[in-house]
Image (tube, rainbow, N blue to C red; front, side):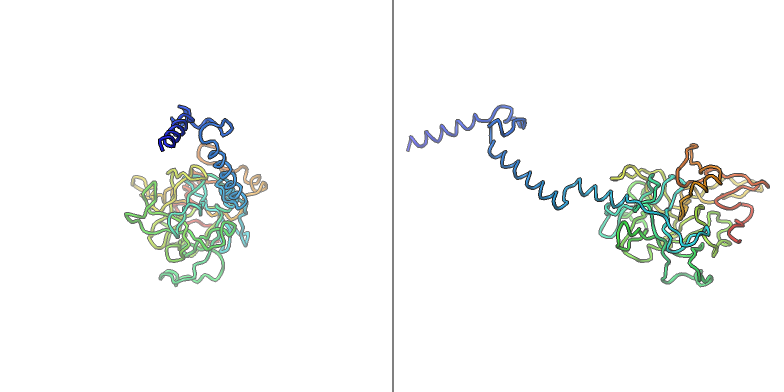
Length: 349
C-alpha cells in the first residue's frame, strides 16, 4: 500500500514540472509540436476548431461570410425609375430622398433591429442608388381626413397634402417594410438627438403615412392639390404626430460607417421682424427633402452648365441643392422652388 502511494506521489510530483513557468503564468506561445504541457489536448482542440470552421464555412455561418452577404444585399446597384418623364413624382416610382442639411440620402439598415418590428433608418453619405437608398412611393388607400374629400386625385401623380407611404426596395427585402415614426415617449426616442424617432417598420398602420407640404407656410394652403415636383425641395409631414421629418449632423455609427440620424422635428428658419418684411422665411434646411426619380445625364449637365454645388463649393455628384437663395431679375427672393412674393408659378401650369 505504501509503495502504491509513493508511486502515485512521484507521478503527481513529476507532472507538476511538465509545465514551464511561462505556461503557468498563462503564456500560450508553445505549440503542440514542442511536446510541452498538455500537447495532446492542444492537438485535439486544434482539430476540433478546424472541423468547426469547415462546418460553418460550408453552411455560410461565418461572421465574415454573413457580413459579405449583408453588404452585397444592401449595396447592390439599383436604378431610380419614373413612369412618366414629366418632372413630377408618381406613385410606383423608385426614388431617392435627399436631405439638404446633411447632403445625404435616406437609407435603411434592416440588420440593425431596434425591436421585433422596427429597423434603423439614417441619412447616408453614399449617394449612389442601391438597395438600401431607394424606395417606392405607395398610395395610401385607407381613410383620410376632411381635406382628402376636397380633392379627387384620379391620376397617379403625388400632390401636396396627399397621403402616401415609402416602401423599402424589393431588392432589399420582399417583406412590406415602410418608413414609420411614432410619438416620443420616455422609452422610445432617437438615440443621439433624443427627438421623435423615425424607423423602418413592418407594421402597416397610421404611423407609416406621410404627406408632402410646401416649404413656404405663407403659400401652403394655396399649394394643396398641386403636383409635387421631382428634384425640388419639399417638406414631409408625419400624419400621426403632425411633425416634419428632419435630419441633422448627429453622427450615427453603424457597420456602414458614420452616418446621420433621422428624426421628426419642425425647424423654423426665422428672422427678426422688420417693417415691410415677413417674420418667417420658411422651414429650416433640416426639413428640406428632395424626391429624385431620375438621375441627371451628361446631356442634362451640359445643358445646365454644371452640376449643382453643395456647401463649400464641392460638387455633390449625382444631385444636390443650391444652398443660397438666388435673386430674381425683378428683385424677388427665391426660396425652395418658388418666390416669397408670389406663389410658385410652375405649380399652376
